[in-house]
Length: 108
Image (cartoon, rainbow, N blue to C red; front, side, top):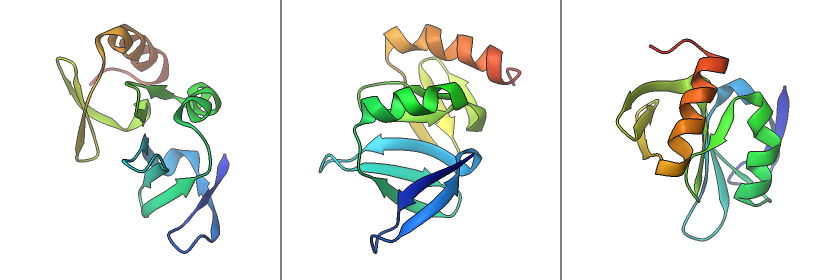
């Protein structure tokens, strides 16, 4: 499913959901989309993004990060690695993450 995002020059770009690694709130409160071919931005809130993306295998793992569960490379305790970046999962979200992993892909 294509998703409209904006590049650094503020041009609209259609990005396939499967290409996205994570979506995160940066220090300036912008919503940054980390994908296979770069970084993009969204004019939204992290909570809205979580609601929209959750049915596609994305999960809000703390107050600033939504990750693509299908892109998880490893889990070590409460830390997940998604294509080179490591994120800490809040204790409250760890159970939901493990449930989502079992629903969207086999545990590796």
